[in-house]
Length: 144
Image (cartoon, rainbow, N blue to C red; front, side, top):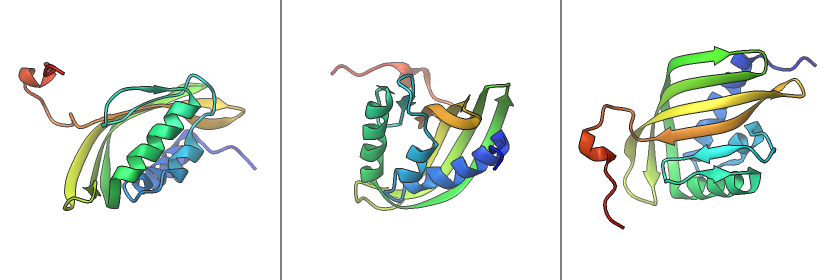
């Protein structure tokens, strides 16, 4: 069997990502590299580094969402080199967060992939709610 092209991997990625909003992290986990340099910066804050931390963060995110429905992906750009590729997108979905009413979300997402043994593996995902322009005030951190 031939290893999937990057475009085929993006198709798998687009099928896997909405599963987090339905409470199922397993399809996204399958896409990740298991090497120690993987990272995840999700909208809940902080940065997970290494497979154990990334896996725990994916599980945590999936527990917070229910009843998700993907509305679409706006691909801003993508780039593929021999062994590295990236994808910059806006993800649009509806979901319940911690059992609340259904809300619409738009996330600004950068995903980086690396070719490992011929297969594209996700090595970094950064998703945040700053999909629309923000005020300068949004950059300041409130005191803890």
